[in-house]
Amino acid sequence: MEPGYIMQVPIHEIVIKKRIRKNLGDLASLKESMKSHGLMNPVVITPEKELIAGHRRLESARQLGWTSITVRVMDKQDETELLEMEIDENNQRRPLATDEVAEAYQRLDKLRNPGRGKRFWLWIVSLWNRLLRRKRRS
Image (tube, rainbow, N blue to C red; front, side, top):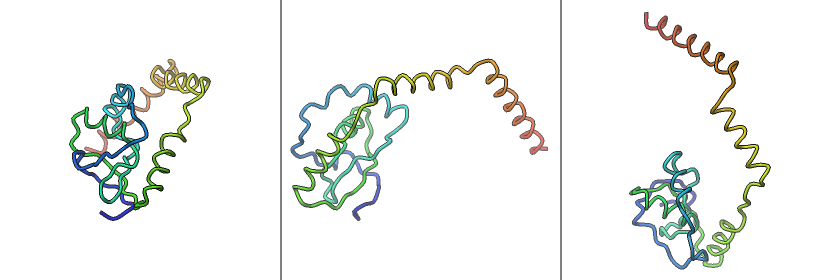
């Protein structure tokens, strides 16, 4: 494996050594997200396939029955640097603020439940696309 590359690796080949995070917590929502949308951020490993970051993603994939997972291979051999990366991965995340979550769900609701005008416009676009497809086939 060459460092810095993204690739697929069999899950059983990834080595998990001593980790800072002892409790992975409830993985249900992460598993549901991975099931619906796939893995959005690769797990990070060393060239020797030692886990650097993404223990919760890796365990979720394992529980979902995945046999391989997308990884980013990082050439960080120094134990101090590996620990710094693990700390950063777990410490630098910032949850969304309450108002950010509320706005996101409002936008999602509008996309899932468009108003009458939007639904009519989408119907017109769909009809137009179907007519164009028929015309191309002829």
